[in-house]
Structures are given as C-alpha cells and as structure tokens.
Length: 537
Image (tube, rainbow, N blue to C red; front, top):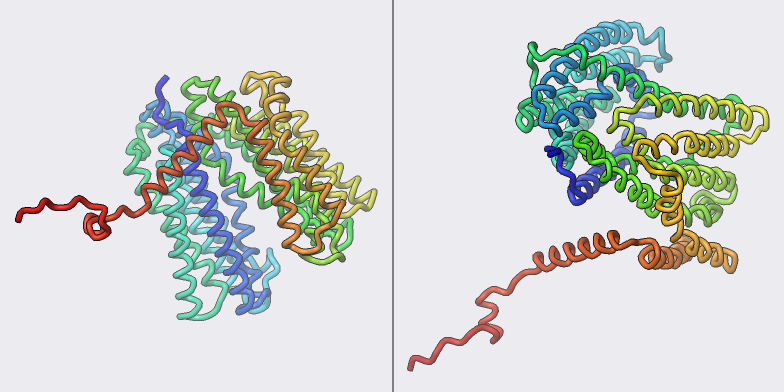
C-alpha cells in the first residue's frame, strides 16, 4: 500500500541532527540565562518563575488524554491519504480542547488571585506572582484549542523547518527579554512576559504553516465525529498514566532522599544521575523524527520493514551508548575526583548504577515508539505503572530500611529497570513478531560485542596507571575507542552496515569536492594551464 509518509534513512538522519542541534543551542542559552538572572535579581525573586511554571504544567499534563494521540492518528490518516479523516480529527478535538481551555482559564484565574494562600510567595512579590501565573494560564489555555492544527510539519517530517522556527522563536524571546531587562527594569516578571509572547508567536506561525502545507488540517463543523474522539481519548488516557507515573518518580525521588536519608544524598543522586539524564534527553530528541515513519510503516502494512528497523535500532542504540557509558563506568572514580574532588567519591558509584540502567534501557528503546505506532498504549501503560509501584517499594526498602541513601535509590532504579525489561521485552517481540533467540543474537550479542575488548583495554590501563589528569584520561578513553571501533567495523557490522557506511562516506567526499573552489579561466591562463590562442601573425 502506498503512503504519503516518506520512509528515508537520509531524511531521518537530517531531521534527527537538526533536533539535536536545536537542543544543544537551547540548553547552552538556558544555562547562561539562568546564571545571568540569578546574579542580578537574586534567588528569592527568581524562585517565582519555576514555582508558578511548575504549577501551570498540570494543565497540559491533565489535558494529555485529549492531545497525546493527535500526532499518532493525524499521521496515520495522512499516510493513508484520507484527508477527510484528518479534517474530522482536528475539528473534533479542537472543540473538546476549547471546552477544556475555557475551564482551565476560569480555574487558573481564580487560582492566580488566591495564589498567596495556596503557595508560599516571597514578601512583596504577591502581585508579580499573580500576574505571572495569570499570563501563563492565559497562554496555555489559548494554545490548547490550536494544538490540533499545528502538526502539518510533523506529518510531512519537516523537522528541520520546525526546528528552525523554534530557534527563531527562541531568538525573539531572548531579544524581548533583554529589551525588557535592560530597557525597563530587572524583574523576573519579564521572563514570563517574554515566554508568553514567544509561545503565542510560535503557535500562530505553526498553525499558519500547517494549514498551508496540509490544507486538510482545517476546522469543519460538519466533519466532527465523536467516535474518533473516543479512540483518541483512549490512547491519550493510557499516555496520561505513563506520564503521571514518570512525573511521580521525578517528584518523589528527591522527597524520599530528603525524608529518609542525609541532605547530601540529594546532591549525590542529582549529580550522579546527571549523565544518565542527559543521555536520555538527547536520545529522546534524536529519535523523535522516527515516529512518523513507524506510523507510516504500520498504516501501510510494512511489517517486515518495521521488524528489521527494530532489530537494527536496538543494536545501533547499544553501539552508540556503550562508547560513552563504558569508559565512564570504568573511570567513574577518576571522573568524580577530577570534577569535584575525592570528598564526593560516593557519586561515582551512583553514576555507575545509573549508567548500567541506561545501557539496559537502550537494548529495547524502541518499545514506546512501537506501542504508539501500533496503538498499543494500554499494555505498555499497565506494565510501566506496575513497575513504578515496585520501584517505590524498593526505594522504601533500600533507602528507608537499609539506609543506603543515594546509592540505594540508584540501586532500586536498576532493579526496577531490569524488571521492566523482563515484562516489556515479550511485548516488543510480539509487536514485531520475532522470538527471544533472534533478539538476543541480533541485538545483545552483536550490540555488546565491541564493548568487551574495549573494556579490557580501559580496565588494563586503569590498573597499570590510574589517570590523574584530564589529558591522561582522554588518552586512555581514546585508546579504548580505537579498539571499540575496530571490533565494531570488523566483526559487528554486516554487509548492509558496511554498504551504508560506504554510501555516507562517498556522499561526504562528493560534498567536500563540490565545496572546493574551481579555478577561473583567467587564473588558468595566467598559470599556464589554459589553452593558448593560435598565432595569427
């Protein structure tokens, strides 16, 4: 069956690279901006922004049962060429989201007026808090009914243009913020004003471009179909369960450490798990462009292609994450000692447990995408919620009973991740119709193979002479990576992988050749290499 969704490795790589680049630029600016504001307005006034913005996040969280399935079902209808269904989806969900937006706006404005009674506001900042919360609520409520009309670039997989728009909006926000801070006054209020104006601009631009690119993504009262709404709400309801469980984990982890361990354990866990969090965040951004292609494969019945992608994706994920996590695990003590000093050596062991959790997770990282593409959110949500309950019990035992602190919390996470893989892997095998033996051979054996000899090199160097400087640590890591890449190319790559590498290298070489300046005819003649004119005398 034909599909309007383009299934292209090159398109995915370009989209993924642009998403990662946007994330890097965003994080870099955010780090600098936070430091700038904290130095000039103080941590007391600045605390208003994360306080009110975190409360406002409950609106998109609880509206997820209406919004989570939009991308999936719009993309599926678009892939099948069913423009009438696209119109029905966006028209139906726009009405429901408008109702939710009105309710959120009314409740949010009441909350903003009584915010001083519900939250602890710094003295003299009550009106700032009221205005900030009211602005964020109004912006969020305004964007909700526009959400169904913003997926035009998503279904066409134009993530480069989407990321470019996001970068331009960020530039506008930073420019507005600087103009207000330097031209009016130094107040945290301007951070929210700039944020609200930037988000409003982003929604307006995305809606206009989406309607231009995909005309079927328009509102039509005659196309409203409540049966579509029930299916999307069922999908979104299970997505809400998953996100609530994940949010509860992020909220409860520091609370458990705060109540059941030493105060220093909160910092140890935060720093020790930082590499894991950054790896996961960048991976999520990098693989986001893959979902439309998976939806297109499922919609058009390309199950064999999806099966091969799942096996290769698990293997590639392990290859990428191992070359980062394995040297960090081997040199964990040296990393923490060089970064913070020997007094924080406990963070090294927390980091090891967190990175082991990451390695195991990358062996089946495509399960959420498969469940979304195949509309199988319910089994994944039930498994994830059950594992979160198990994780809380483990945390109470390791941290509360055994008094293991940050190390116990990281250990509970590793055990829970292993249990989650044990109950979730059969689901992924069923979705792509493979057996455990094939998965073990294709993903685990070939995926872990390059890491074994490289680890031996790293461990051997660490035993002979532990690195005491960043330069020596870098040399050790580089030496192991040479072995890692050699084994990867010689023993882990198959014929398909080598063909793809040759094509990529060839494309890069041709691109470099095209970028080289060509000598003009004048320079050719002057250098004696051009053709001479005949003698007419």
